[in-house]
Length: 247
Ligand SMILES: NC(=O)c1ccc[n+]([C@@H]2O[C@H](COP(=O)([O-])OP(=O)(O)OC[C@H]3O[C@@H](n4cnc5c(N)ncnc54)[C@H](OP(=O)(O)O)[C@@H]3O)[C@@H](O)[C@H]2O)c1
Image (cartoon, rainbow, N blue to C red; front, side):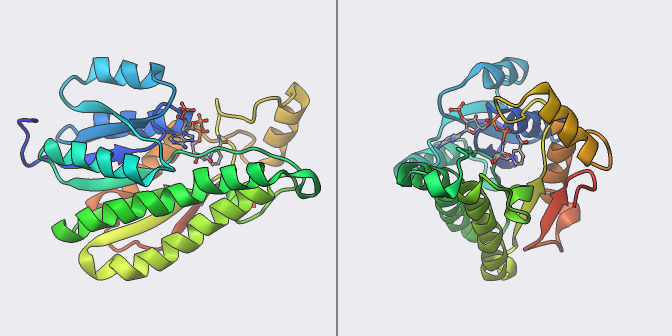
């Protein structure tokens, strides 16, 4: 049990990834009163660093986001710490690109499950807790691909566009209960570029971006932090595009 009874709990899924780690670090650094729960699946190295730096405030939580049972267990664990779940950041995600003509049904289902079904399950688990407390902040990490689907990403673009639709509808369902639901649509993130990109592809993508650079993970994390703050209390159902001016 934590000794900080008035603290609020923050849950970030996929916290061992590049962006998830930056988001977790931002909450740990900027909101010293909070308990930060970092959802993990296979990887643990980045999460372990934060656990060591913030003993008693940072927690690793095994959370396979496509499993309703895993969500239920994770939320029970948070409840045992005595600080109500106030913020859920649905960050875990993956892509598995292919042209639709040759995409396998497994590729489609896997990407829809990991990016969209996961957000449904997470939001459902969280709003039931947040409605009791009449307070909550949900931030869903979508992608610019949701707004401008690129070739080769029909599965990912559809899943992330689904996240934006879910965000808008759920925001209306929960607005009167003190719960806001917003989404962020980043373009490429420094340090997390698609595996297999050549130097030329990286260069071309940078040149295409009016700012001539990709987002730093901390820049996206700062937007998440703002949307989770009291200052963002009148923002709900919004999608924040973060692309350095690309579209
Ligand atoms: N990178 C970009 O340029 C970019 C651009 C726009 C949007 N995004 C979105 O930003 C989010 C974070 O991306 P990232 O670049 O930080 O990716 P990343 O470094 O690959 O991290 C993704 C994280 O999600 C976890 N994860 C994936 N599927 C999961 C599942 N079924 N259950 C639990 N955890 C799961 C991974 O866990 P494991 O350690 O087990 O693999 C990993 O920790 C994603 O939603 C992504 O779609 C990224």
